[in-house]
Length: 290
Image (cartoon, one colour):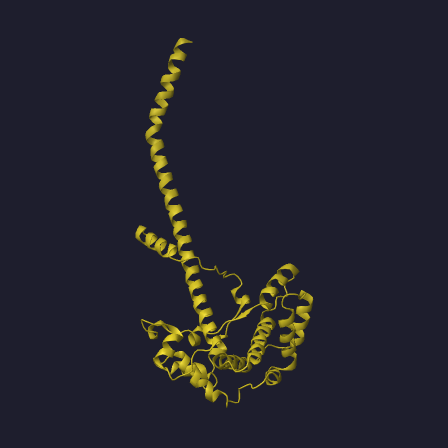
């Protein structure tokens, strides 16, 4: 890495103002991301993705809000908590409810037994329906309780898939604590406005609302989702910069040590005859006197 690159990295690093650090360790346990196989479902299933993909330069809030209207007539639409329970299966739903209530106080034995009783993980089709219903609830803010039930199910399914049966009970329990307290992350491709479409004066969902004053304003859930995603991106950039500076420091230390060793050897080679002559001059008179 050149000195110019190092200085640029240093400048970018110190320009960051006191962010909250994120820990990439255990990321797959601490967060529930929409699986790739769910994301890859056809447009007829992932209607919100299709709306964004075909929306051109229209703001994402407007596109998601428009897609939410016909989704309510979709066969996958879940109209009540009872519908969510029936759809997911009683065993999985009961595990989700138990996990939400005991996420801070469970024993590892209890968690393993409850997860086993929940049965197999949700199928891709069921998982896709739950994610789409979550998007609907976030956009419309129709029912807080349905939204919470769906999120609890996604976390419970995450636990069933990732439960740690490590022979070392301490390690297994530590991992399972992360899994039980996992946070559902909304896809940024749906809920975070692209910077190129956001305009110079306003950004994100604010720009979509300003451009379409007759359309629905951003709900608190949408604003919160955007804020969380934006903060997550910021922290990811910080982590990347932190790694760059650490690598730059390592490169500098290696280069400094190599240069120091070379210079020290050269110095020793130059000074050695002088030192030897000095020692000889000191001890020579003593030897002659004796």
